[in-house]
Image 1: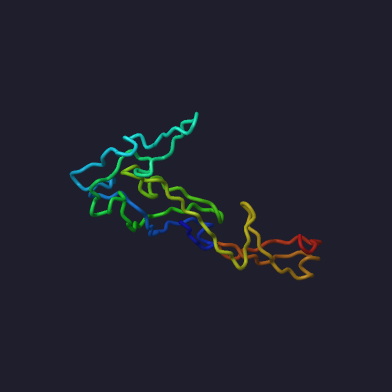
Image 2: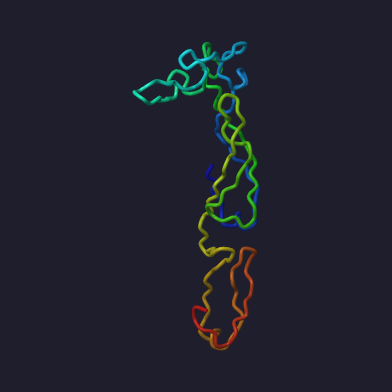
Length: 183
């Protein structure tokens, strides 16, 4: 899931709710794909092995069974809820905690909140990729925050206090006399 946040939100951290569309195990068939009260049958093509072997000269070649796609079982009567797939689409609202200082492109892992596993298997993990919007004043380099502050020539030559913007509000910075431009 791609999540876009502001520069300020990335600096202080936050909690947000996201709506995730995902495939979840069908409750009617418990993810098997077979109608309630029935179960998948052994594949008649491969005998439940999931592979079909055949002789080609001196070699024996094994291929994935085309009838069961390697599962070894076929569904004779499909579940009406999921039409034999074993999963149904659902929308889920999750709360995601964004830690302070997160950088653009970092991923957060939410255990067990991903897509449902095949044939009733456990759910996978959900990865939230954070994208931080650019800030008009500040730029980030690693753990450091930079901004440009205009300083007049007399302050550079003689020294003095200059207001500098910060995320918490303006602060005064003392410029020592004899400071050069770009320092």
